[in-house]
Length: 128
Image (cartoon, rainbow, N blue to C red; front, side):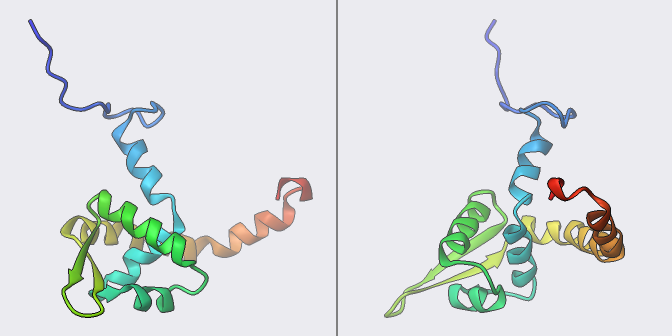
C-alpha cells in the first residue's frame, strides 16, 4: 500500500529541525519582518513609503524581506499598471492575524527593556 505524505514537516516538537513551528519562527526571527508588518498594519504602502517608515533598512534588505513575506503569505504585492509602474504592499489576512502576537512581543520588550539592559551591564564583556 502506498503512503501519502501530506507535509514534510512534523508538528509538536520545536526542537525537531522539521517542526512546522520552527520553520515559522525562522521567518519571524527577522526584526525587519516584524517592523514591516507593523508598518503595513495601517494600510497599503509603496516601497519608498516603507523605506521612509523604516530608517536604517537598506533597499536590498527591504526587497528581500518583502519577497520572503510574500512567499510565506504574510504580504500581498500589487503592481499598478501606470507609467512608470509602481508596486504596493499590504498585509494579507494571515499577516493581519500575526499582529496580536507581535503586539504581545512588543509589550514584553517594553516591559523588560531595563532588565535586559541591566543584564548586559552585568554580563562579562567577552559575551557581547
